Length: 174
Image (cartoon, one colour):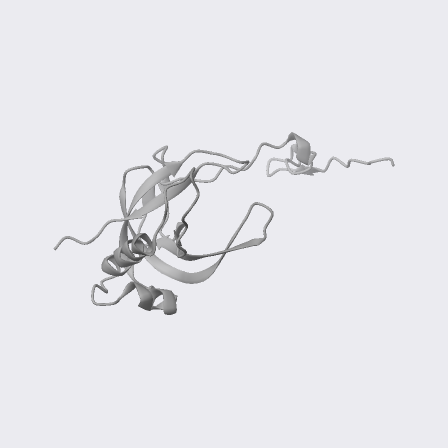
């Protein structure tokens, strides 16, 4: 099979001919880089999506364990790890396992008490201290539109994925 590559040339505003930067082969491109919020910063975020679903393994098959995925967006401007601006609306995710996991000698057991503590923290930070963790499991939408304070961290690149932010809930002061 013969492959033809067409180099697109077009005049710029001064009349000079430029080479189209998008005309090169994909093999020559670096992986995309995504902005990452600076680490160890407290940021205000809105919970814009809250869904419960099955956890999938590397092959994309459901493993039977459930998780709660919270989609969060910053409510004001912040800076990335290089000091460049990141506008309000920057998206991040927080995932919380909802299933007890025991019996794996290579890992620490995760009990329903651990799950409850994680969900209680979400509720406290969302201003819903009188609600029960079971309420959040039964109706994840109860925390939608809540403004919460999160502490940022940076997860190193791994498994072909670029570095990304991690987020931990910071409870409101009493």
